[in-house]
Length: 496
Image (cartoon, rainbow, N blue to C red):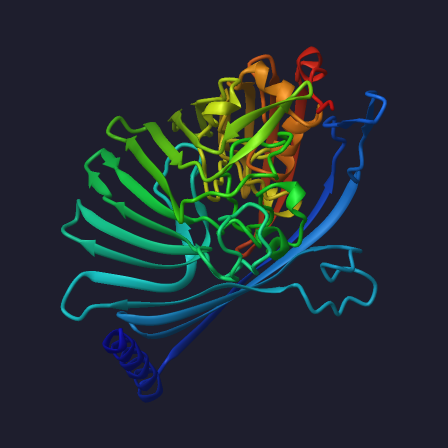
């Protein structure tokens, strides 16, 4: 271990000496985003009071204004050595003191380290390394990554065998040293701070690019410490009762079974030190029939159970498993034309079978960023409003789109219509705490929790005007028709 530390220290000294002895080209760039939105949501929160009656509330603002600033500085020593640091200011809500948008501004808590890494190559080879906090997106086509697309501390290595085949290896550490010893769901035989609280991910990807065809088989193995989920709520600034969720790019851990379940935050201890995580994917694209483009993405995920909890159904508790495993398939077919690109897209994800005793049948994810549609996904304006981490688990859908339509110079349009359905059993609703638990899944987790009786119809119109080379104006219009089945969801609500 001492030898390894000495070698790493020596490498750091060499890097520092190189940067001090040679000319460094500093390159600065940034992104300024301003967003203004009007919305009228029909996703009403309903809760059951002590008398068993339900009350409905809608606390969403009708209008909001936000902004975000990202600055990046690249220090380029040569083609083989460079360093990058990036900062983010925002998302800042106009008028909100916490985010720095209130009267007088001057908030001190809104500047975040976005990325900080070095790129280097092994001399006389095609082996490249990137070390540090970086953007990691697992291979995907057709609707974005359903597993992981985020910034994370990691080391990636890439080797190019030839023009057609390369290999990428990844080690990422999303979590470590967040457990302060105040255990609520972790290992029962110790409450030592920092004990068994690391989450590590290891992945291999093999991109293959041929004439008219590309495919990237990949797999990722994870080690989930028994206390790795502890401290996350405090770290994200929210109580544990909101579940294990994400917004605005913070890591998401949909590794536990369900949103809204009674008892989901009372997961018992486990004798296991680490639990296994596993994902595999097979995204491929066919362009041999250009202008026809075909994209297909297949994914599978598994999260080993780490402790049990009691799910309540009409006052009767059932000992339930925290295991989660499932699959997802999504596809896109489009045809390029002179005036635009019409296409059809769809997806299908496995859903819960109605028995929490055997765990969840929805595919787990880390930080998914589905983008088939604009309102539910992270579209052009999604950064400003909600930054959904969308994984499509427990849902199916089909949609039509025409993207990049242009009839006036520098003005383009994209129109989409999509229908969402659910693949989760209606029997799961009886275990939910409230009749709006499906909305808890949408608003603070990774997507809407829809049963086989539920549906959503979504319309998007995205307009982009390129006023200058580096200045775009976007106008997005979206509408969702809510076909959530009231007869199904009125059965929800924990009863004592």
